[in-house]
Image (cartoon, helix red, strand yellow):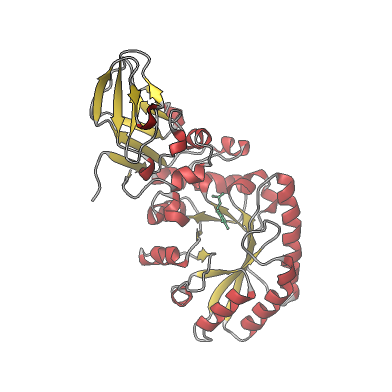
Length: 367
Ligand SMILES: Cc1ncc(COP(=O)(O)O)c(C=O)c1O
């Protein structure tokens, strides 16, 4: 049961537009819309359908259960899920034709034991080309490729792809990884495997270094309208979420009155504050206390004092603000609203955390 006073408005047409424009700019054969973490907070099925409408031919998830949610919603395109835990539902992935990302021989064995010759698993080998997070390290490639070739020969798996992920420290560091990835691709071919899909680039490398992309790009945050590098600006990205709360109280306070926990903000004149029911439980970072921007009507204000669990106050001075007005925390900077990136910077974080942090109490309204 949602209260209507908190709202994240979702614009699927923006996701479709962004995916089409980013895919065009990347110049890759195919695009994957990455919809993990509930479609970066936009709703996993909404985001997937919108990305597919924009020309993506794949969906990407972290968890297998996320991929199964897409299948349950009737999405039939290829899906890759790249995180596999010891108890992940690999058997359900195989039954639902979900590609499983395999990062180690241990994971390969787990998948093989859930597969059969009658129903082989489709896998993609995840290569650690230097990021140092998930994926098989160079020392493990030979063993992994040999075991994958053997499982392929026995008919238990089909090795559809090989992929890596860039650390994105710089274009140069990505180049070093791209070179290591080429060595891995040569290795997998020498083991007798011929992967159909080869991919490495998420939002930033897909546009900063399109020459590293191979056959498809994996579009996450940029598909939701966030520009991560200057190259994204020329793409014309459209924000896919507007987060807003309704003013629930307007009150007059005298000069010198503290506002909120610890009284970290004090009114300087006789003024009016507006109380808005979005707080850190809804994903508003507490680090944005006294700096987070909010727009009401055509005017911009700043959060006054601490972000509480469920609410914030804004000093609106003489502005004409009434109970029931909508306060936009982030939306379309083209309309003067604060952007996700602005919020991230002010709260010392990244846009990903702002988008995925929008809480479950916030009603998603799909436009
Ligand atoms: C393997 C992989 N590919 C693609 C993405 C999408 O990244 P981005 O949102 O930067 O496009 C992620 C997200 O972290 C990822 O882990």
